[in-house]
Image (cartoon, one colour):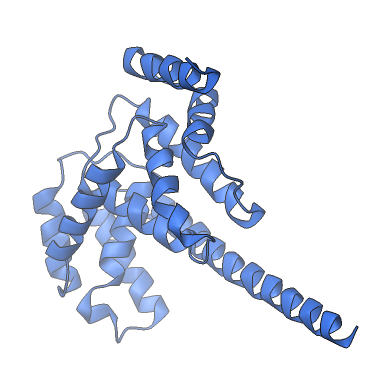
Length: 218
């Protein structure tokens, strides 16, 4: 039996017997995804890995539909432009399984849930959130971003300006008995991360173009 197989078996056994530490999750992740992750995306993957591991240790946390929507949608948006693109499914699978989550199940629940919320007004979305959610939602960044993602697609928000949209989103969080201040902070950081990622990708593309022009001149 190879050392690689022994390592996987050891971590799989530990995974079944007890909660994995962040260090364990990282080792298991790299076993399942043995590729170099470009620096632009490495920080995002590391942060998500730590976040999933910590959530898995919280007794009050439940893997509900909002968790599934939040995880899949933020992963999809933050990893835009990742190359090779064909590695993304394997990367997501490794990210989930290294912290005791099932990627296939999460994707299925996310897709089904998003269809339920499609083409609705913000009031309809709020009603559906209340109907589908537990009496006590476990607050987390992923939960806040899931709600934000669902609400931001509301039909009646398309013609609102940013100030009105933010006010409506804040009101909905309060009606769900969630901290609107924490949600606002999480959403702000998320938007900032997306913006910085886009700027970094543009800069990298500009540098590549300049290098090509230099090579052609030489």
